[in-house]
Image (cartoon, one colour):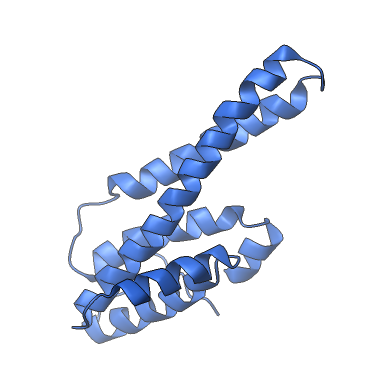
Length: 146
């Protein structure tokens, strides 16, 4: 799946993170379907792509184009914050399910690795797969990093 992140310039990282959020909830016993954060992340990504398409479709000197750029930049910044927060939440849920304590150092490492082209997603996916094997459950879709 990491190849898809690289091929899409990082866009698939948002989808992968949303799938892992769903999977970690299933593995840890929360089977209520999709939670709000992954749906917000995917909805925000869709809105960003729509705004980007609109920005590209207007001529460079257009006032409409200029008016669309600011909300798109704000949305992109919010999406990045949600991405970092989501990665930390997944890491904390996995660590707690494995009986480990969450730590600020670990959270900062996850944020740093996420900032470095989503490398943390590979690490988190491996931890999620280990947790899934220990719990004897498999998420609805196998999102293995291999």
